[in-house]
Length: 175
Image (cartoon, rainbow, N blue to C red; front, side):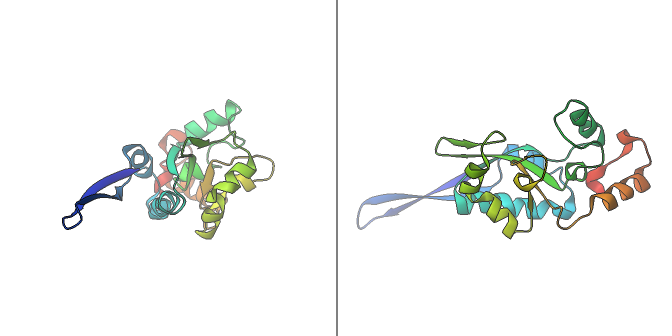
């Protein structure tokens, strides 16, 4: 988290206090956030801020917008169950995150219960996000998307309509 220290000295008592306030996103977070679809970017920022401010975890974004080509490569390598155009990442409407708090690291290999104990899936649901820990057939607890608001078939059709059939030409985060 990015923090700014403000020093407050109470002269009459001779004590010095440090007040720490959050001032923005880390460079790591910003690098991912700026590539997300403008339609959802603000909501992802609010989500990350809520996790850090309300639950006390540092958020490490490990994936955000992915090109169609990258998505197909992940499918071909057996890393993702879906190919090009079939992931909300292809439209900049999904992020994958890890969490860190007091030496506790919550990541892909963490149990469903460990994720639930963080409060993050519940927070996400309250903000209208889908959690990949609830996906049937593929446990993806690091994944959060706006699939409740957008239809993947409509997004895919629009992407091909706007950019044609060559995956390298498609700018999914602008769909």
